[in-house]
Image (cartoon, rainbow, N blue to C red):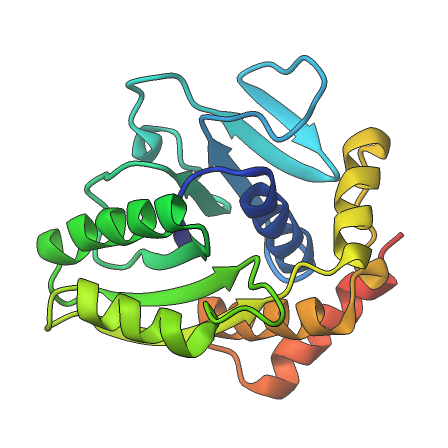
Length: 215
């Protein structure tokens, strides 16, 4: 099980991937690969953060050369790479204009190279009472991508204060407690895990429950 997460590697995107990895670790062993360190301590090429294994990629290094054959791999991708057909692609689409257009451009590169590719989109940092909501973003993505692109699904995450607190505290404590996240983000994470593993709703809920019991 290998997943590429498209988009600029912001703190919010990295936290979202960390949350997904933490939950998925109850179901399968996961390694996260990224050119940006997730830990704020000094790190080696391989390190552990919040109970998850990470590989720090160097500039110009092909992430595919570093993937683990024994584990599932989450790749934090800010640029195009030629992925195998069995990889899943999730676009982490933030709402500010620059990050949105950058993510779409990157997704477009993947779809032109792999016309049969399905893309799952997560709208991150949706703002309440803003006209730039999921309906607008759906139209923007559909208008911008090649007509043959298949969107496997979309989800939206309102980054409530409760989740931001968990994000900041985890950076200092090197510990992520899934049960402290808000219910809306946990529901979104569950749906994403359901897509990644092709699970039914009941099985995905059980994976999330196991993650919530972790200390």
